[in-house]
Length: 203
Length: 319
Ligand code: HEM
Image (cartoon, rainbow over all chains, first blue to last red; front, side, top):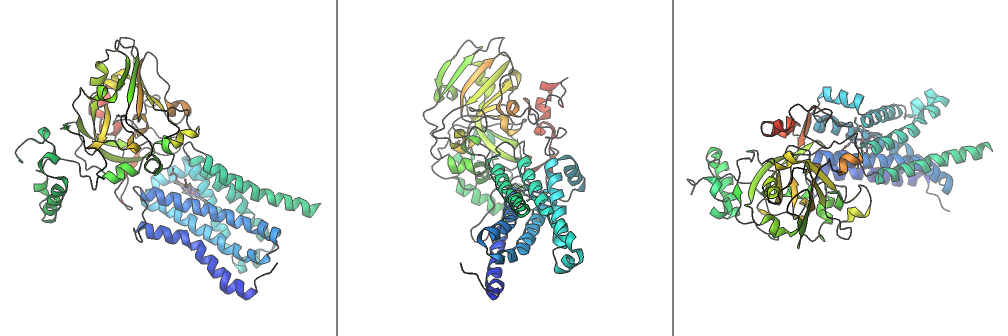
């Protein structure tokens, strides 16, 4: 098996991955302004909420898939994409949250607080966003050094984010749970793979 | 021609739609929107594809709202019709193979006249009316739709319901071959809905056969659907093949599947929230990305006409 060189990862793969992660956002921006023949249909606010939410979740699962992929393929460099992908998750969830705050709720703080307190799926989403912000802030090399071993522990929060996000998705569905079930299944496999490799390393 | 009362004539009888629309645009461009309002009130369609059959002999109704209807495109591409899939775009995307002709409706239960009747026998004896109604979905969005239909009460009376007919139950057609959504048991198909008989007889309740001057598109519930403007949209059952007069409260799909979240009455009520979202406000479809939500009105703004149906009832308990 061949491995890309450090230079290839840095100057080729990472920029390409950056653009790939940005593609859904670019699509959304074009569609919001009805450019390039794209459109969000009759309810652009809801479509934005769903589109950006589902991409946040997909990128989150991709982030969680990088470690098992490295273990399975021995391609150590894929780990170098992990921080960038995770930060994209934070970016997408932030857009999801801002779309909720401004176009959807019109910054009606009374209604927003009521939603966060009374609607469990919003409560979970907000908890997930809070975790992601902590992970984002502490994602720098400086914080990593400063926190030492605790950094590793703190960043296991991403597993919690995965569970919160999938439950959030599940609970906002009216009736048809097929799609959230598929995502929850993928999450279960990814988390399960950690348990398996943890047991192997012990045993 | 502007002297004639709008009620007697259809705008499309006067001027071809395109000319009419252009004129309205011209008037508005000239700052003459006040003058434009003198034109017969008519729904502004945008583009209606020629394949839809025009409905003739439609009269106006004073039950219509003066609010601007949504575009034909909004009304026909943003739908909840789970028989064709659960996404809003599924009904328009997946209903191409559905055949609304020929069609028959079975009338049964507590009535003197029962049997199975062709669509023409059901609708034919009645005068079609345009009813421009507000539509409030339980998901907290809303539209204004220029329906065409007949008062349900006028139809029901022809079958002479007996004193045992306390409720009216409705059933959607079951055709998994043409309705891909029915191949998965998300709901216990066929879709069923029901009304108390006084709600069914109320003059605001209609059976719609069209919208925007043309026969109902498949995605909107062709060829025959209910419209009850003061209730959440899911009560307005589509593609109806059975109407039954019954003595006890019938099975209704959403409220019997998720009784905690949806009630039999499903009256629009800004004070009773859905367990997972607020019903106090609604998003008007078609108002663009930065349009504010608008307050939801009690009984969707039809309280003056229908509040009497519910005097003495606890609308929080009977949601
Ligand atoms: C890790 C964080 C989050 C993830 C991964 C996430 C993901 C999702 C997903 C996948 C959906 C469903 C999309 C679909 O149906 O196609 C969704 C819907 C939604 N999310 Fe989030 N979300 C997150 C956080 C939040 C936060 C912080 C809020 C607001 C406080 C929020 C509010 C909503 C709303 C309002 C909906 C739409 C519900 C509806 O249309 O009924 N989410 N989200």
